[in-house]
Length: 115
Image (cartoon, rainbow, N blue to C red; front, side, top):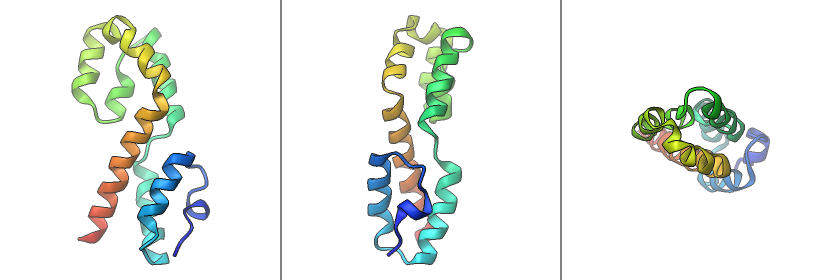
């Protein structure tokens, strides 16, 4: 049983708990493979925060494109972040946005490793 803290010490606490639950049944070799793939696919909360701040001064919606919400990204782009209200909400919830994206990516990596 691999400890995810040793494989990916930079994870947020909630994300670490979730990923650890996925890695528990894996062998050490599978856990290393998972960590390598997942590390490249996940989004850092700070990246979401920075791109959301850029939305105030430049192109709104970049953070939504980064997390795979193309429709919302386009909506933010054409409405100036829904008149900045959506951008403010994303500023407040940037950790949740990153966590939800990362959970989906972790699930996809696990599914990919099973085949």
